[in-house]
Length: 430
Ligand code: XMP
Image (tube, rainbow, N blue to C red; front, side, top):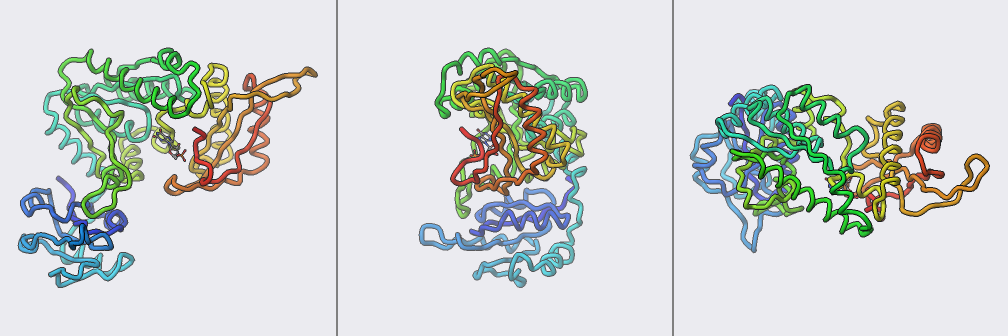
């Protein structure tokens, strides 16, 4: 392993990830581990240079303050503590913006090197993947989202044709999205890629279903069935690749960290598939995943694409999905993305998309009355997707998008702009 490691022990701080980021931003790799890690397990971590005991407001569990195993002090690593009164450390960090003490600890006390780079990370992970997988095969559900694309690129680098990617097109992808996944991975990265066009199957199952939760359940459930069917056709697969990233792990909670949401594996695959997991991005934050994708040579658009829900355009074609409205969502979304990119808004706005409701309104086209659908434009900014504000899109840009949608998208006679923040609205409509 090329990288030095600073271990953060979680003693109930809410700032573990902030601290880990701060250390990584100084060029040193750092990982968060539970406070009760055994000295043996800690010693087994590669290239440990120092330990930070990170206390905080959640240090009392069931009426008892948690403590580290005193044997950890005897391992010979430099140890520093934050907000942990019982600490036996000589040095303490008074607060997280205390950069000077932190730098002195990292680079003088621990003699850590600033060798946390994406190039080193990729080489280390490729080596670990090769060791884990040997000459066996890994299966990966490649949605085309940032995380699964980066995992795929990393696995291709590590094990080439031993990776089998399955891309399921559920018919709810954006314009040209599946084509782009196939093109990049099969033609450019020479991946062993199985492309499954399951559009008809999904649209058939969704026909007449208007309830949003029901739609989501059908799409999620059907996805697992299609993927499982493909997996069963293959022989000699022992591993399942997953795009798990660091926030998924941290948010699952430890004894001292409050649980935010439970971490579920991608697609919730049935246990009887009996795969071992390969999760090479599980120590990366989202922006690091993107940097990793760039380093691996993935196209900018794929790495910096905006969040896209698993059920895809299915939750943007409101109510019961019909082919004409699905087409209207897909075409209007493509126009919106094109015009946002032309205006430079694609780099500024966090998420933007169109939806098409399942009702019509009266209009006029070529001097005749028409009764057609409307397109609603949504453009929001957020930090964590928990709350969101509306982007004040320039009038001229909106005007151009409206004119193009009205001229180029069939069955549409009206364009609206959604002014609602989250809350009370959510980002998506369903
Ligand atoms: P809401 O609508 O809850 O969306 O305000 C918050 C963010 O989550 C995205 N989203 C999803 N992402 N699977 C996903 O991977 C989903 O089922 C899903 N539903 C919503 C949404 O696009 C927004 O960025």
